[in-house]
Length: 308
Ligand SMILES: [Zn+2]
Image 1 (cartoon, rainbow, N blue to C red):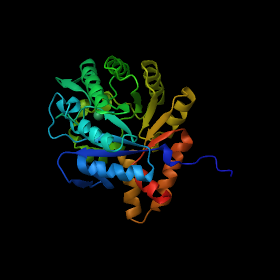
Image 2: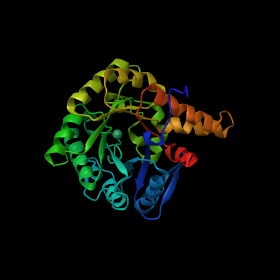
Image 3: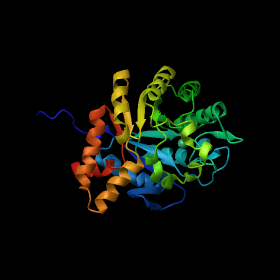
Image 4: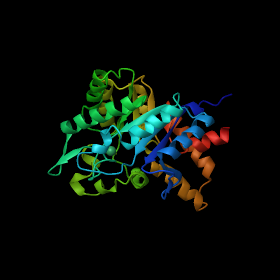
């Protein structure tokens, strides 16, 4: 009765990876229990998600081909566009969040367009807006820009409205830090190329882990530009940011417990150094306690299974 914070199944969003081909379910080496799914298998997975009572999924795509223009990101028959259509056909009520970024689709692995070693912010906005509209057209309920280009929330909002998708909401990755905790995710989507190329790494557009005030500024811009939900990523090492954002706005807040947070609990538990379930549950409770309304976590399915 005196418990102040509770984790509910309704808080959780389950990340899923859509992979080319058929009948494919590849486990990601650094993320035990997380898979790349071909679309047929992804729809089966969503049936389990729906039966378990998880309200939402967020989709990432591994395209057949990558190029410098990120063509796969906005293609009518892109991997995520096809996945959304297939999921929505079978499960119209499952909330589908579509991550919007270019790094899964660019041959260089960056989140925007580049020329002569420089990120092209405004050119990237055009491609991101086109991508958002094509995902909304495929049936996405929420568009989640994770690229961290300046002005992308406003550009995407205008593009969605102009295309008639006024009901599609924007979940903005407002405080996305240039974090080492993303390591295993890059295994999952094959975008390792961009990391570690000195000046051309993602630190020119993602936030510096040393900067809390900058994330408040980014969040204020996203709110101004029309974001409906704000996100902090990663979650566990950035609970102070979540807590400060809670003071800044009454918008719903999301937090992404990222691949490295998931992997480290698995790895330590495998060695017998941590109690797996207790650490997992505490990590999620702490995110909720810090102020998150929504939590994106790879643990969503097993939490739901244990509650079932
Ligand atoms: Zn990206």
